[in-house]
Length: 171
Length: 71
Image (cartoon, rainbow over all chains, first blue to last red; front, side, top):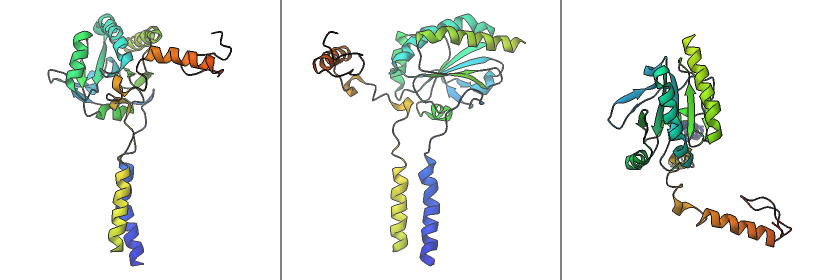
């Protein structure tokens, strides 16, 4: 009996450890976007909850990710077109080494806020399933659409979604 | 004594939980060219193409068709 109690006690303490690393489920359209606050290269924090009232396109990218290279010119274009109309791109870099991201950005500059998350806690909170992953977030902070991967054909439909969300803000 | 063994087994099991495969955002090292199976992607594609047609197999990977030797 004493042994049984011991068994149970040890397992009771060990079990949470076993399940502690079980991954969080992926954030899908309709869910509230997990909040984050991450620094830019200059160290200024960008917080998602401070961007309420704006349509936000959160993009997870890395220097080693091929399609990310294609998405940057498009995100620049979107920022330029809709930046003044209540839209912003926030690109979250997940490179382990900051220098890799900096090299990427000298080749393909960005005209939108780029923040850094070397620890990868924010992609974990979003449950990112592939790179790149983008989350279109409405003015209330809810995820409106999730784009996994980036292909050139997705640009048109994505822009329509951005337009629709911006129109919804005005009304 | 037994409790200690049990505790050690439990701890060892808990250790296994930390061996997760890398997450999608942690695959920077795996994306390096030196980590690829093929030396050259285009070359591998053409090798596969020839292989599947010469071996009369249906399809390889990356390229469709094969078998008749005509493609």
